[in-house]
Amino acid sequence: MRKPVIAANWKMYKTVSESRKFVKEILPACESFTGVEMILCPTFLSLAHMSQDLQGTPVKLGAQNLFWEKEGAYTGEVSPYLLSELGVTYGIIGHSERRGHFGETDTQVNNKVKAALSFNLKPVVCVGESLGQREQGVTTKIIENQLEQGLSGLDSTAAANITIAYEPIWAIGTGRSASAEDAREVIAFIRQWVSRKFSPGISKSMPILYGGSVNPDNIGQFLEQEEIDGALIGGASLKEDAFIKMVTVANNIKKL
Ligand code: PGA
Image (tube, rainbow, N blue to C red; front, side, top):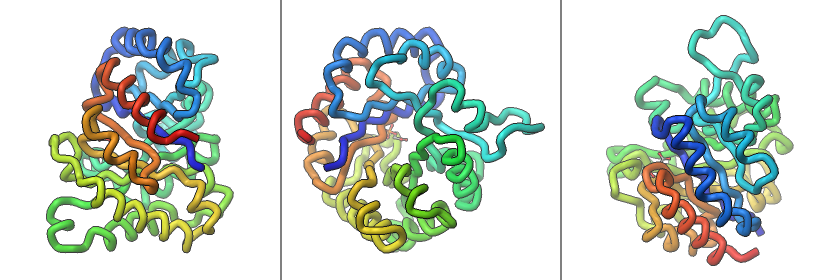
């Protein structure tokens, strides 16, 4: 059985002090949820501080992005090598906001995935279609392309450390989530792809998440689907009580 995952993507929200305050407030409740993989992805600025605050707790840290080179003259970039010293466990890679606003390509996603793995960071690889693509009926084609290119050249050992997040672009930050059935269908497709590409064993153990307007009221309908292992949550993860509620739902629905 796969461990459920609740991952908070804070995007460009929360100052360092706001981030630390959040941690302080959620920790007492989170200490008891050892059956849920809880991941906080703050801005780069907060990582070092939160790393100290989260030491010895079950809550893990993730970066929202990373660069593929180890170090060098890359103004403004942060590498997995630099992140690894901070006890960062995960790295979100290929979020649609990175692809959309910063022109990130599948080749760059692939470089980032490989770089993250080489420094023992676990990639959370985001894939998803636009509204136009969904309406044209090419959703699975788009997802398959993103997976083929984004995860190209990886072996099964590498794949065993990857989490995939299915995030339909039209559902992100819009308040319009996919239906649980739509999400389940695409995630089942992703799991079959992983099985063919790597192995049935990897496919069975890989966490595959849904993301896009998930909140405390609708998270249950996603997590009730056996295929869906958890959620990558933006807006609703910014509030302490909402975060704890969503972890509680995951804990109750996905009893190990
Ligand atoms: P949202 O964002 O929950 O605010 O829709 C999800 C994400 O971008 O990962």
